[in-house]
Image 1 (cartoon, rainbow, N blue to C red):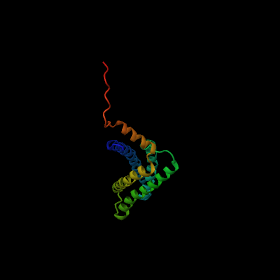
Image 2 (spheres, rainbow, N blue to C red):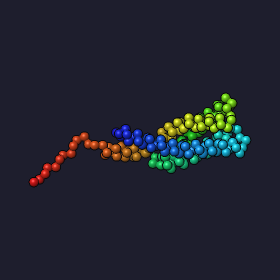
Image 3 (cartoon, rainbow, N blue to C red):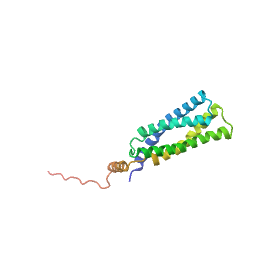
Image 4 (tube, rainbow, N blue to C red):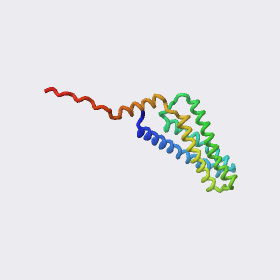
Length: 168
């Protein structure tokens, strides 16, 4: 079995990489959202959906080729299909928050739209992290076995090695 600290360190690295791509994706999402709102007359949620789709494409590239580059690369069609499915659910979560704020409470100033867009991204990110790591970018069985072997080799042996006898 793998020591806790090694598994925890791997999870911390994964969260850090996921977060780095995610923060960049937030800038892409909010940038496109505000650009579309500024240059068009599209309703706020439609502008947000366009921005979310652009950010999803950006994030896929970051996740596949950086965050999860060491994960199973077999079945890219299945991977992309699952990524798009879970991203679509995240899109509904993210834009559902914005929709509720805009049309449910009438909070539709540019500042309010950005705040609730950001809140929606945050809620959807929790779902996306769980779903991407669980279903989309899965650990390869051989990779998992190798990490266990490496961890085992670093553990001290429970029995001391026999001391060699000195010959005079």
